[in-house]
Length: 290
Image (cartoon, rainbow, N blue to C red; front, side, top):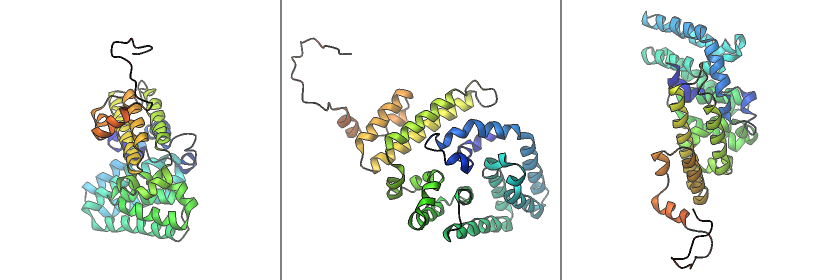
């Protein structure tokens, strides 16, 4: 079911769109990507089904050849396969690799060859995206962080371009030195998360995307992204920003995970008035109070 892949698909935007992140958050391609994917759904499903049938028939090498071809040439024939190539196709390749060791060897070889190109200064956003997606498929995201550190040290302009792909792995690894350098203002990051959540709400009634499943996904994704931004703010020792993000997020969605995002003492501290203490008599009327 394609919903299982949605969290990965959300990060799989073509480089030309990713570079517009200041205007549109990286997740803002969700609608277009899913619509494009569903438009070609029959062909995609047929390709995956045919490959799985080969695997079930024990024709592992033939299935591997199909995966290699798709990874190398799919975009030449259909650019809209950008997301599918780095999600569904890699997941299927991994399923084959779990049964057929040469498929695992080839997948890692493809990853390592592309990693070497990036390390040697011959990389770009798309190549880094390939490596990052393979690492995520293999559950080796630490390698993505290691590679991003090399970009940060040797090719800073390319690191800036690839940050929107690397950020989840960097945050997961708690590499806050990198996060501090590329995140900037945590509250501004929260604003992007909020904008994407509000945009996705407009899709709830879209028969091709919306529905209860998408609503549940959007709400959960909003909470998880807010928790990440709060975690970053705390790591950067910006408790004020963390408290502000928590308050704004709870105003949008009252979720227990957001309520528990900050230690209780931080919540109490944030709740203290910023001005001088008010010595008004308890019996005096409250002017303009709630």
